Length: 167
Image (cartoon, rainbow, N blue to C red; front, side, top):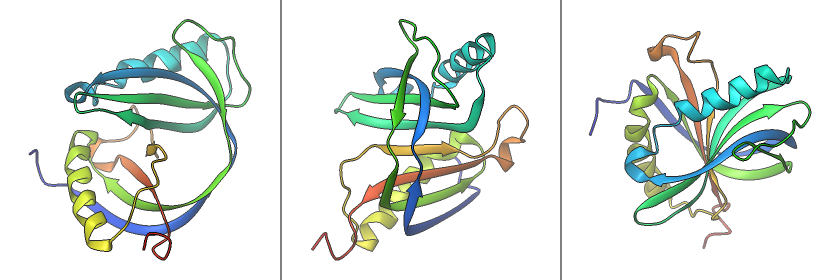
């Protein structure tokens, strides 16, 4: 395991997310490569720039499926209006949702997120929470190009049932 997580806290809360237009790249990679997302974000950013897209500031990864060997991710970039799709870059509207989540708030280098997931898994079990099966979301609060590594903020959302539903 890597270094200790710099700053991490957990919560069980209901959150409302509005409908959101996103451009995204869907990839399936070995678990060992799941942290290699920078090139996909760069492709999305470059495409948005060349098409003069108006970004919403919503940048995140949806983990939509996994097996013992691989994980399927959607690397997402919020936009005000849809752009023409390419072979790799697709568009979709994520519906508004109001869900209960187990949430981890992580402050520090993104390389430490694996440690945050380990700690969140322990906390998740201690709380007796049950996942719904909906995608896990890793939401990037600030821009790594303009923010020192130890100040990066990431929110991790695991959709869960309300405690009284999971019994």
